[in-house]
Amino acid sequence: MNNTLQAEYAQKLTTPEQAVKAIHSGDWVDYGWAASTVHDLDIALAARAEELTDVKVRGGILLEMPAIFQVPDAGKHFSWFSWHMSGFERHAPDPTMVTYVPIRFSEVPRYYTDNMDPIDVAMFEVAPMDEHGYFNFGPSATGMAAMCARAKHIIVEVNAAMPRCLGGSNVGIHISNVDEIVEMKEPKMRCMPAPAPATEIDKAVARQIVAQIPDGACLQLGIGGMPNAVGSLIADSDLKDLAVHTEMYVDAFVDMAEKGKITCARKPIDTGRQVYAFAEGSQKLYDYLDNNPACMSASVGYVNDVRVISSIPNMISINNVVNLDLYGQINAESNGTRQITGAGGQLDFVMGAYLSEGGKSFICCSSSFKNKKTGKTESRILPVLHPGSTVTDTRANVQYVVTEYGMVNLKGASLWERAEKLISIAHPDCREELIAAAEKQGIWRQSNKR
Image (tube, rainbow, N blue to C red; front, side):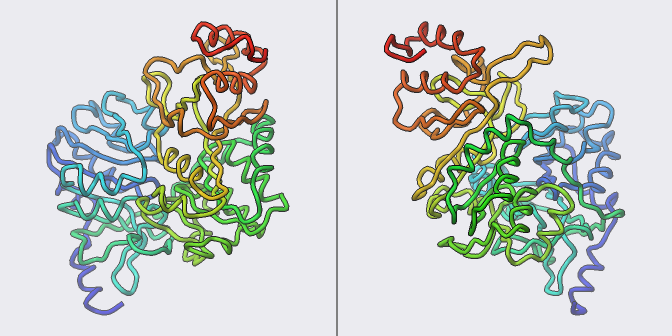
């Protein structure tokens, strides 16, 4: 590192307590995204709570409970605007301080540049500065470059444990564009809890999907047990020359790559490289991504662009849902009006995979679940979505739906046919009730099967 860069670094280096003095009441503050969410700066800002009111903070996919959530009367001092609800946000001590920002993930960079007010302060974690003066965004490129372009004041929190994630453009920021530098006192990566072991239902769903995947396919996996089960089956399968183009990079991809299933050799774009917008998982995942030229970190504006996704042959998209109805409307976000997670890029990949030559989009779920309050078995396939439920994927977007009882293709299916197909993969104990509801709704005919 040359002397000029060293001098600039020393001049901008400060403490978390000093850095957060740039934040004032009423400000818009960005906290980063996922693994790049600030830690020491968050603690320092929480310590100033009594001095501040109406500080509006944005972030998403939290890996720990922010300190600003835990101050007395948190909602008086801070509001949290979430790009993607997590368990920490759902269980905030003061739930009134948390709200959700509806998104299509691919559009987030443009939200920053075209649709939202400028950011007063952006602060986020980065990898240590390289010899050229760049701080890498680590496994969280997403919309970070667009966020920085709209920020009036930028503070980076240097995490010496952050992996340096290689890619194309928009994967880091130069020191000349940074106002203040803070060094994390106890550098570490915050990891996701280990996923629960795959259930027999997860495995039953996964087996059906894996049977539909050809050699050379390109994969997108959502978060959750079933996509992980698919990844595990692929890792132990005979499939070869698979590729990755996914918004979220998860541990299942590492397992597949280490077993030689992923080469990305047949991709017409980004050949030889696993492309992702952000990554979250175990320390093993972060170690794998660090300085790995086989992996390509990129802006979500590129990764989730339907035109980019659809240009990759045999694109396979696999995502979870909360529930769906007999019309094929998919709710992947809410329990009625209660927001429990975010849309992310599910619709981007549902649309892009279907437009891909040979591509397939799979929506998967267990056919039923046990209601913790009543102990009753309830169907995930509903006559209609519960009032207030979010339609993440419209009925026209959905291709394959998979439960442990089978797989159906809804493309081109009439309302009558959709009802029949979806009831055929519902839990057997729920089918007669669904048929009665379909008859009442006028989407069941005597000619339909029972």
